[in-house]
Amino acid sequence: MKIYMDVCCLCRPFDDQTVGRIRLEVTAVQEIIRRCASMEYTLVKSEAIIEEISKIPDIRKRLRVEKIVSIADEQVILDEDIIARMHVLIAMGGDAMDSLHITCAERAGAILLTTDDGMITFFKMHQDIQVRIENPVTWLKEENK
Figure 1 (cartoon, rainbow, N blue to C red):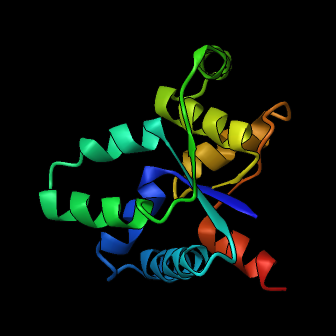
Figure 2: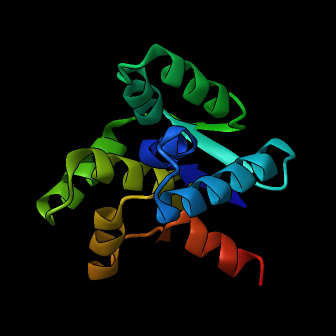
């Protein structure tokens, strides 16, 4: 199974865990990363993820997120078709970066995990998006049934 985690999801283990929801998401993300490292799942990265991570201002956090992404077994390279599809999603009302991540996950045939409620809501409103988008906690619960 292929997993594409957007950058907010990849950064979740380094967020303030005093909030219950964040603590649950940290645990889920860490478990999914563990399963990717043990090759139970395939972690997919993209040029978009690499670029977005490079802009994390906290160098320590950036290096830690880069280390997580280094276990990815597959990388989506941006091309004209991905950019064209991204523009279709933007025209539908999607955020530019979210649209790019959705398009990359579609290309990889991966499940897109995010902690961004807005992205999940956007997906549920548009049936022509070709990828499943879930919160890591929700997805992991379903996966463990």
